[in-house]
Image (cartoon, one colour):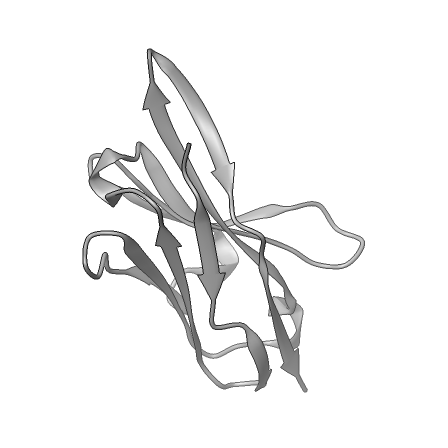
Length: 119
């Protein structure tokens, strides 16, 4: 079982920056995948960025060059650095992780943190 706790959400003006944190209850090295998704009102949850166990990073096209994964800090915290924020980035941001246990991949989600970008 993996617990994920996000923090750092809030209100930011367009063009501004924000850093989200995700603290995992296990050492990140034990995870197959870790990263972020987001869900805007009335829309499906979408990928923001993830890092795979081999270190490969994947970003949604609209976020490349603006969002960056960083960390882990203390081996169990990952950050999402968001720059040049736009009103359309407004969403609930969820931390996501996959852990392989007994040959089965289990997915875990945090409770989400709201980011609101004002124009």
